[in-house]
Structure formats: C-alpha cells, structure tokens
Amino acid sequence: MIQHLLWTFVLATCATLAHAQTAEAPHDHGGEATHDHAAHELADGEVRKIDLAQGKLTLRHGPIASIDMPPMTMVYKVAQPAWLKGLKVGDHIRFQAAQIKGAYVVTQIEPAH
Image 1 (cartoon, rainbow, N blue to C red):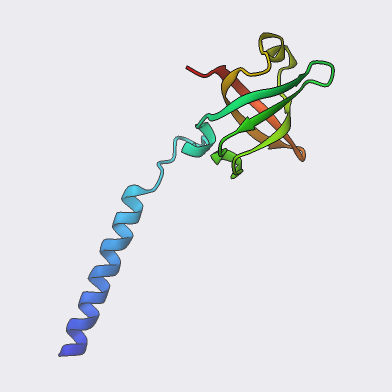
Image 2 (tube, rainbow, N blue to C red; image 1 turned 180 degrees about the horizontal axis):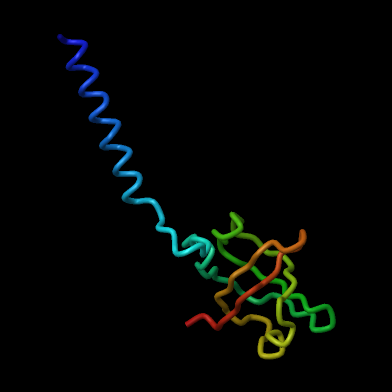
C-alpha cells in the first residue's frame, strides 16, 4: 500500500514537472529560430582606437553575453566599415558582437545614452 502511494506521488510529481517545463519552453514560430535574449542584448564599450583602413575597432568593453566574453579591451572587425567614420576615440557606445568565421565582429553599434 505504501509503495503504491509512493509511486502515485512520484508519477504525479513527474507529470507536474514535465508540464511546467513544457509551459515555459519557447514556442515554435512556424519554423523560425527561437531568439535568445543574450543574443540581442547590447554591450557597453568605449572606443580606444579606430583603424579605418582595416575596418577594425579597438574597444574597452563590459561583458558580452551573446559570445560569453568577460570585460576586456580587444580589437574587432566591423560588419559595416562606414560605421567607423562617425566615431572618435573616447566615444561610449552600445554594441553587439558575434564570432564569424573565427573572427570577432561588431554587428551593431549605437551611441550610448
């Protein structure tokens, strides 16, 4: 009798947990990839150097969640080199970065407010 009650409790608990995980799982949007919040979060950075000829930007930045990178200073390629023309050393920016073909690339940039 006790074993029967124990199994009933275990099965009910498992069913409840399975339902809770399903209810919180991302929804399928007709084949579209689900979006990770970290992938859309902008990182804070300060422009340290601009290399117009190479299309590169040296940034001192905080953590970048989308690529699991801690705060540091490093050089990035820029997806659109024209973005560099409006920047100057010392500017504070918000940006997104991705690792593309082994290189770290700034894929979005905006002035920090």
